[in-house]
Image 1: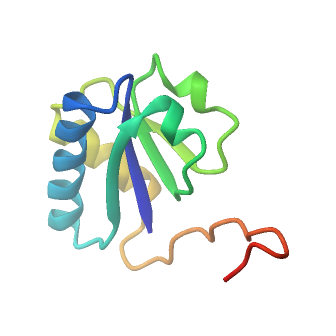
Image 2 (image 1 turned 60 degrees about the horizontal axis):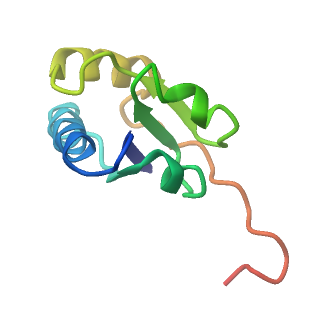
Length: 105
């Protein structure tokens, strides 16, 4: 499973969010790859879930990933609640979209 932590510039704020997501996932016993980036890079990145702010979520509305919103990137309780609402422990991640013919490995 791949999760993107997204902020406006992809620097410090998304890094803090990524670290908090990783902490919460570890507490929940969920294995996932978590990356941080800016909103424009995230628009073209493959992922299962994107976690971002209410202000940036509309910019990712067309993404194939499920966009999850948190008000505070520092609030682990809120991050935990949002993740628990969308991730059932032990359940498989949603499938990633297939690559077009000719681009598959």
